[in-house]
Amino acid sequence: MKRTIIFCIISAALISCGDEEIPQEIVDDVSTKVLDDQSIERAERAQKVFQTIPSPYETALLFEESGIGYNVDALNPVENVNKYTTSVQQALNLGVYGADLSYANIHDQSQESMFYMNCSKKMADALGVAGAFTAEAIERIEENMNNRDSMMTIVSDAFWTCDSYLKENKQDNLSALIIAGGWLEGLYIGTRSINDDNPNQDMMQRIAEQKYSLNNLIDLLDSYDDDAVKNIADQLTILKSSFDKIEEQESETTVSKDDVPIIGGGSTLNYTPETIKEISATIESIRNEIIK
Image (cartoon, rainbow, N blue to C red; front, side, top):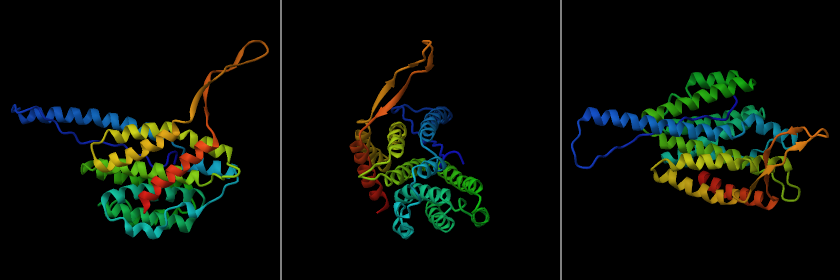
């Protein structure tokens, strides 16, 4: 699987035209066009979010290269699953548990992968998406537990089922919360590897790069007129103030001895360890509020 969990968000639109009575077929046509336009816009925003988020496999490679191993303490405890009783909690933590499931699977933690698959199933069932993690899907997951790519494909299919159900039932705001929960958990896991005394440079760079996906995620959430989504967007805006301290600087072109440019222009991110630690603290606060 190339990307963690990819969701395309389709919206519901309401149209009003004052007190003038308009034939229903015209209203339907206009409503469909607005729905299509907004759907395309949100789908593009969702795509931008996931184009800038490293996949679990990419993150796992970075952990391995940096000498950072699996850390079960960074995950949302499975016993928390029974605490989430509202649809907002369930959607956010479906994203969280989905990220935890991906992380455990990438590190070949078969037993814990099953634990987090069951947590994801419980959240999906609570949202009314009983067809996401069927007995057949779970059996396939168990049979492919040692096949990383196959398992992630199966899990991805389950989350696509969730997305389709929520779209069809005009609950796409919950899909947005799933996206936010998954993104926050993935970044939270990354920040847990930052050592206060000797922070890992590669990991700090990867965290800094998330300023781009954060901007796109906030844009996506801001397109919803929903209190729960707005609440998460507001919290992420606070996080953005820390990410804004990371400066983007244009790189100079490198020139060879024959005055031939060998490296084109580009940009680098300038930040301090203190800024990354500030981001880590804010992420921890937001994430712990979600899973409490």
